[in-house]
Image (cartoon, rainbow, N blue to C red; front, side):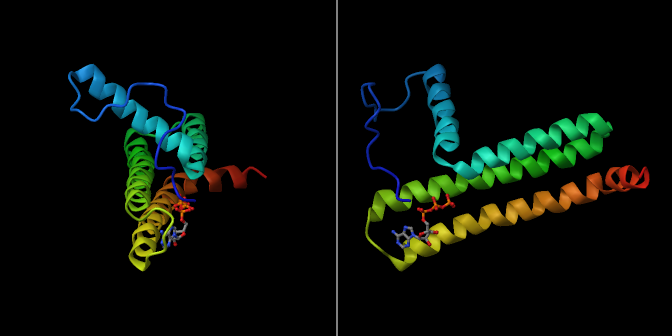
Length: 140
Ligand SMILES: Nc1ncnc2c1ncn2[C@@H]1O[C@H](COP(=O)(O)OP(=O)(O)OP(=O)(O)O)[C@@H](O)[C@H]1O
């Protein structure tokens, strides 16, 4: 779905100048994270999955190095979604509703980056949780 060129719901004075202080810059960075959650349905699914991993990880008592890998996996997916959203926004800004093969390439490669990151996270998840899953299955 092509992104809207203008944010019609925005009541604030539009700003194109540089941020004047750290707090203003921080506010815009947080707005950027908010945009990711609002615009990307997949991002909400990733957050739900990360929450489940967090709860299961706490329940089975993962060690420090396992948590390190889980954190790397979760952030790799989140970073890929950031890149995907940036690419979508820039492509839509440039081409609008027109079809361009290179626009398709850019968007598809950006989506592919998210898919690759999710694959990486699934492999990490299997390697980390496999002993706990096997131990759980042996109780039956
Ligand atoms: N301007 C365009 N020119 C050519 N192909 C396009 C264009 N816009 C979108 N596409 C094609 O349509 C697909 C869906 O585009 P869209 O902008 O809706 O991404 P999306 O569904 O939001 O992607 P994601 O699920 O990664 O967020 C793209 O992956 C691309 O193949």
